[in-house]
Amino acid sequence: ATPTAIMVGTGLGASHGVLIRNAEALEKAYQVDTVLLDKTGTITKGEPAVTEFITATGTEPAALLPLLAAVERRSEHPLAAAVVRYAEEQQQSAPGETAEATDFVAHEGRGAGATVAGQAVLIGNRRLLEENNIILSPKLEQSAAGLLAQARTVLYAAVAGRAVALAGVADTVRDTSVAAIRQLQSQGLTVVMMTGDNHQTAEKVARQVGITRFYAEVLPADKAGKVQELQAEGRVVAMVGDGINDAPALARADLGLAMGGGTDVAMEAAGITLMRSDLQGVVTAMALSRQTVRTIC
Ligand code: ADP
Ligand code: MG
Image (cartoon, rainbow, N blue to C red):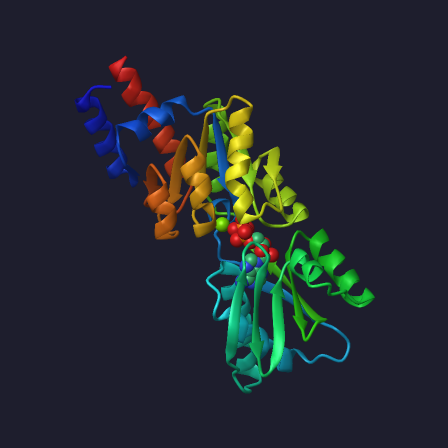
């Protein structure tokens, strides 16, 4: 690759909001045949909202929500922000006490926990409940199945070792995702999705955007392993992500692309940063690498 061509390519990229770190990143982009996309915050907006809140018999939402909000205020997860927003909206109609959380613990890829008002409060996915040997009542079990059938992300809440509520959370696909994924596929690239979210929600989103191969319920620590799995099939993999969780996978991939709206850690691990938070930047990066490398050869 001639320095001039690289400079032209890099400059063109920048004018389209695609920041290319170096010549190597541009050359890697040219070799890529598989694009692995994170779901939350990459394909979807990453601005999830609580759409349903169901409590166990004998539990008042107004008493429980401040406890959950106290835990989630301490978390940096987008789902935590959704819980906090919901609790605040509900409290506006029925003002009450706000609680403080101590001993906060982030359970990576599962949820969060803390002590609030002297009680152990947990909120997160099914795995978090199971790991704490917490059993769902038949009522909550049935409600969870109903929410999952609607492709909601389901959050489970427990207080003092007892399951007390469920929250259904919905995130919307970005307007530009479907077209961008179709363009990548028409360039001959295989597009794969990966998420920590449950299988049913993952499947629904994948279908919505025209992706047939996906990995669901992937723990943050296993994301890089999925990149390796694809590489072991002989693929040259570009990974697109936004979160701290995605950084090892971005680094492991042949080419990492970080969404600019995401975390600094993701951007540091990536060869390309997309200034606009949408997948159109991936299409631009791939097209640009082809143009640049072809000019040279
Ligand atoms: P993603 O690939 O969707 O970004 P993450 O690894 O960040 O996945 O999270 C996986 C799952 O862990 C989430 O879908 C959620 O169920 C649960 N989770 C993680 N952090 C929290 C939190 N602070 N509150 C509630 N649930 C959480
Ligand atoms: Mg994410």
